[in-house]
Image 1 (cartoon, rainbow over the protein chains, first blue to last red):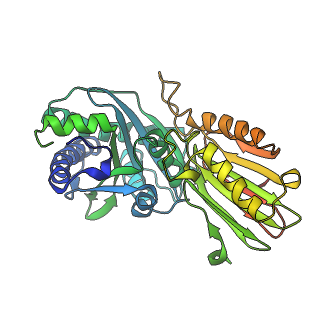
Image 2 (cartoon, each protein chain N blue to C red):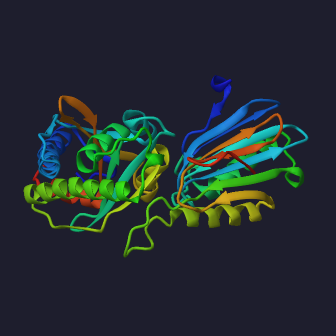
Length: 206
Length: 161
C-alpha cells in the first residue's frame, strides 16, 4: 500500500523506522564523541509522527531561541534533515570545543555559529550515512545552512515545504548523555512522501 | 492578562470584538494578516502557511492565502465589517534558511507575500502597513480595543505597525 502521508505509517513501519533511527543516531553519537574527545552516549530514539504544534511542544517553547542546521537530501531520497540545538546541548558542545559558555544564543559570535553549524552537519551526515548503508539507497546531501531563530519559525520551514503533501513531521527524539547529563536532541528527518514509500519498499515492508 | 489572549495556530484564524488581544507566535515563512474595523472594534488575525489551495475539497481553508483571506472576509462581513474602513496589516514571509546552490528553496515566504497582496487587492482591501521578508521569525499581536498591531522579533524592540 502506498502511503499518502507520514501519518499513514502502521506500527510495523514505524518500528522499522525506529530501528534504523536507532542505528543512525548511534552513529551520530560516535561522531560527536570523536569530535569532542569525550564519551557520548545516546538513548534509544523514539520516532514520532507529529503535527506542527505537537512537535513544537515536544521540543520546547514556540518562541524559544534555538540554533538549527538544515541539509537537503536529493537523489533516491528527496527531503530535508533538520537538527535543532537547544541551549543545553549548544553549551555542552561549545564548552568542550571552544571553552565558551553562554546563557543565550544572542551572545554568540560567528565562530560559535559556525561551530554549531559544523556539528549539526556532522550529526546529520553520520545519521544519513548509516541510513543509506542500511536501506541501500543513494542520498546526496547539500551544504548545510543554519539559523538562530524562534523554534516555531524554524519548524514552519519543513511544514511549509511539504505543506501540500502532509501536515505531519517525523521527529526522531533521543537524548545524548554527556558527563551524566541528559541533553535533548532534535533531529528531524523529512523525506518527501514518494521517498518515504521508496524507503519502505527497499526495506521490503510496504 | 496572558491567558485572555486569543492564540491563533498555524493555518488558523480567530476574531473578536470590543477588547482582547489576538496573537500568533513565531511566523516564519508564514504570513500573519490582521483585519480591523475601527468603528465596530472588530479584529481578526489570520495565519496562512501556503499561497493557494490546490485541492478545492481541502477543509483547511485558513492554511492557504487565497481561501483563508476569502473566508476571513466572508466571516467578518457577516459581523458587519465594512471593507472601505477596514485596516489590514501583514507580517511574516521570512526566508529562514539560505541553502547555497539552491536559491529556490525557502522562497515560500516571498511567494506567500505576493499571493496575500494579490488576494487582498482582489478583495479591494488596502494594506496599510507591512513587515515582511528578512530572515527572522516574528510574533504578531492585534489589540482589538485600540487596533494596535505589534510585531515582536528576537533581539529587537517591539515594532508597532
